Amino acid sequence: MSEPANSGPTVRRLWTRNLVIWAALMALLLVSLVGAYIPMGRITTASGIVIAIAKSMLVVLLFMELAFAKPLIRLAAIAGLVFLSAMFALTLSDILARP
Image (cartoon, rainbow, N blue to C red):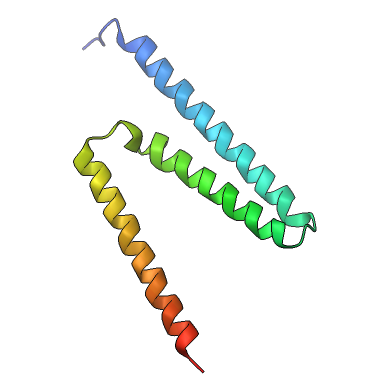
């Protein structure tokens, strides 16, 4: 079986897009690694959290293609985040309530 004639540019575009995303994730990893060894006080933790959020947004929106997904799939992803935040909130409330 031969592949369709127009599959070449689509596959090339997909690989290029994924390689660009991967390169961005690797750059953010290096920024995170370098930032962890620079003593900046509380800004070190804040910058680490911001970088982690940026990396997770790249993965969720582009690798998982949630940016182009149907509304029901987006709703399921949001429900997962709500559930995860509820679990963190319950764990934190338990820890803070202990003497």
